[in-house]
Image 1: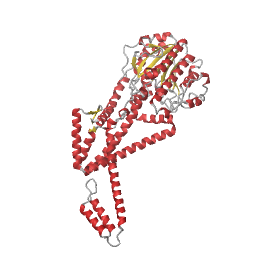
Image 2: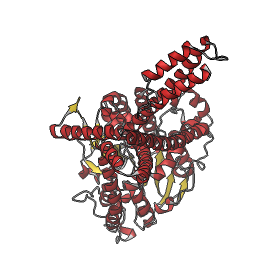
Image 3: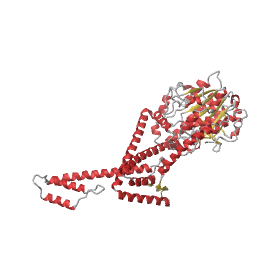
Image 4: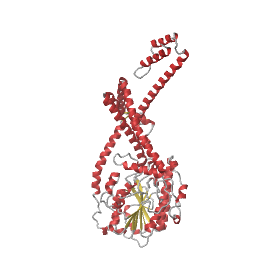
Length: 610
């Protein structure tokens, strides 16, 4: 037998003596045999100088393979622990969050150890897939909390994913949308595959070392019970957790609540105090007036109350109050509580107009397929107003426009704008208002107008922002190509929360100035303007506040109009006082229709907020 052959036998013997962990042993007799062989080489054997090199390389390969095995196992364990312990909110994503004992992991380990071969492997695969889906859900929740200050609704929020893709396209271009969608798909598939492989690998390891795994699981179970009993915490975070089970339990209850809510909403929608009122007795206090309901995107209470914004925005409102007073207008302001925050403008708009609390997509679909009359619909029912919508954010078919009682809708393609988008915003606010003047309000020999106007320049991401120019220079909007070049880059702005807050404030100022100057320039004795925010901006701007209040203001030159809302107790001017009355946004419709009905006044109580 050659020396090379004996060397291979020696290493094979070493491998054959591996323990359960795969560690190679080196028995003394084998080592002795190798030494004896080395002392008496046979004819034709490999030179002694070559022996250490070949043997060393094989050992290095064995050590490398063992290192890869151990490293892969460690990564598998870390991945499973990550799935079990990672929170679903960015602000809770701290190092302390991972220094906990997950009850779900301990119970899963005990179950896998107790099951026989085939059921155990099936359970491991299914558990891996579920852990992957759970991780995806937590990551989606992070995004929803950052934008909407709430978790993802498993039943009602799927449509919002399509809206998110559209938002990315409008803000960062088609290429940015493709990259974002591709990245999400790759992440989703990778998490499912890797989490399944990790769970199967850890299961195999536990089975190979069943006694050690059983003892470890028992010790961890006892430790978890002890920590719960004693309330052990690390920097305020409980060591023992069952957060994943609680999260899933909350989601199950969320689904059940959604199903129940459909029945509750149907009952609420059937109640309408004005359904039987004859058309000639509706909104009699506004006959002959042009009534404009104007929503300013993301104009929330934070713009007025936040110390970093209160000064500049307050100055715009104070200046605007003075300029409108000089033009003969008076104004009153209060607060409304929106059903949403961060996004979901259409839910807020439909709440305001329908007098129902539209807090989710299910309610919105139910509303827009019902025969419920909206505030705008009642204006059309009287036959005394032409009802129009200035909705620059609409860039596709919008069948709901008919439900809201609008005779004619001007979307982004029908305003005559030939300038650039400002990120998501298709048309700058100043141009939208000038287009309304040109297309409807400024026409001669027309009927009174009731208009729903959406000002979208203050829509997220607030970069770049248009600026005010001379109204006579607006033309077809081409002038905004140069103005856009002066603006900021959203990719750079969103790297710094303070820059985001600054750009948000500037966008609100622009929207307010556009509206104030339009009233000052084109308003008259018959103008009645109600403008409000639709919801608070994203938590990046509100600094985590979950408040949902938005300002609401009514402006008119005719004092008789404001006399009818004197009982509301609103603040004089365009800026509501901190303690001004606060209603649910769903209360506005009935209060407004009552105040401007034949008897005037206000209802005794506000509508509920569902």
